[in-house]
Every structure is written in structure tokens, then in C-alpha cells.
Length: 130
Image 1 (cartoon, helix red, strand yellow):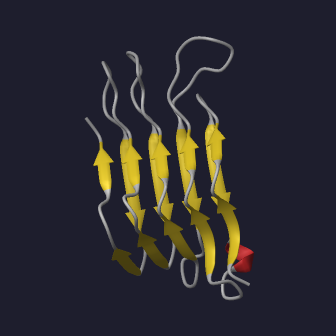
Image 2 (cartoon, one colour):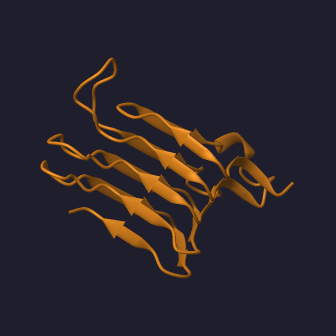
């Protein structure tokens, strides 16, 4: 089996949390999580949903594989502080011009954490925390 959890389209949860995990599938699959699309959880302070956006891509620490080639966006276009992006797994591959955005137009920039025992960066990764 090639991928466990795949997003090639768009997941949008502004003011909320996007969490993709596939811990139980690690070791059976080529990629536990494959993110080639858009995950957007921007911070918002008005409307029915308010809060800082959060995006989590979590594989298992000792065998989870994560492939990111898409866009992770927990930014803020207003006065709110930007949100959080956390990508953790055993094997972490970031390719094909992936972009992590935790910038804020008028508030504080957000937080990005990537970690894994083995990591590989191919192509151009853009991280915006301004």
C-alpha cells in the first residue's frame, strides 16, 4: 500500500485545527501521511469561529513516514497572531516547493516545528514566519 492519509485537494478550517495522524498504519505503508494539497487553518478573530489556526501532521516516532509537497497555512491576514504548524514523524520528506506559512499581517508570527529521526529536504521549502 502506498499512502495511508492523503490530501491532494484542500482542507480548510480557519480558526480551528487540522490534525492528520496515521500512527497505526506505520510500517505497512510507504507514506503514512502524504500532503500534496493545501491545509489551511488561518487565525481569525471575528465571525462564528474565533481562534489561532493549528495544523498537525503526525506520524509514529519510530516508523511514521511523512511526505510534504503542498502548502500548510496557519497565517493571519489581520491583527491576530499567526498559528502553529507541527510536522513530526520518523521519516520526514519535504519536496517540490512545499510552503509553510505562519505569517501575520499585523500580529506576531506563528510557530513551525518539524522533527524526525531522519529528514530529507528536496527542492525549495519556503517558511514564512514574518
